[in-house]
Image (cartoon, rainbow, N blue to C red; front, side):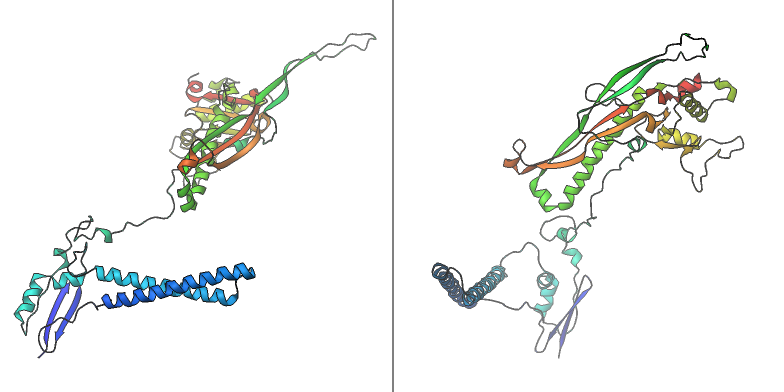
Length: 432
């Protein structure tokens, strides 16, 4: 009569069968033993002797012939391979023998949990011909989030999202508005007309008649090349082991330079090492015509009057710079019946106002505006493009396996005609 023992463990069914009595057809095969280890130890010694012999033959051939023959190379390779195979097999058997039934293991297999279960032991001891017993792994797995014995914590592995989640980056815009240039000097000098008395007039044809004299004044202007730079430390090992990290740091450091450059080009104070920014040098807004003629003033009206001010100074504006909040406020302008004045919420429109492109940047302060002839009025001179360099020869980097990663750029800004730029505050302009 066949006896059956069916055990349900976490959805896995194990069928135990017996021909002469209850027994479980479930046992790990026995591998290795003292005899196996002894035999392998003898084989390993022979293999080691063979490797030593081939090494001596190789040394002799190099001394006598100046090279190693192909036969010796082949024999040496075969001896080394055989030695490694025997050594690996010996290690494997030693490890398996170390895991004896009497040695407690950190985490038991499902088979061990089954055979050591009290209900299973009682069933086997009774030697019943009929019946069944079951156990659940829920009682054996005590926790899912620890590394203690009986825990499944190591089975739960977090899902790693590829790459590095970087913070948002600002879109840089001011540089694209200006005339580009390059220099190999540490300063830029240019001659600027700073005064002009125009006395031109009609004159008499009478011989010897005096002609009116006009006066023109010139000054030499100088703007210095400035350096924008920063650095970070990293371990040499992490850069070697995670190649993408080096390119990531490279990109972040370059972005840091551009972030400061954008603010310097616009708002640099012109003192110390700061650039003398466009907004800093721009001409203050002053309505060139009576603003009340247009009725209740809006931000849109103020921009139009600033454009007119630049035009009357003989510098037709080609761009407008606003903070995104102010541009959004302008786009949300509606008619008396609730229709958007010029924006299309469904399809959107190119940021333009009074036929000029609108540049949105958070480098501009909220409630401020700037318009003018950007390409005519200012120019960037790049002395050294943004670059990133690595060095271990910094401080005690060599001893600590550290790498200094430095990013820097050098540039100058020449604002030729400050009167070609008009700046102001909406609150002040609307209150006038």
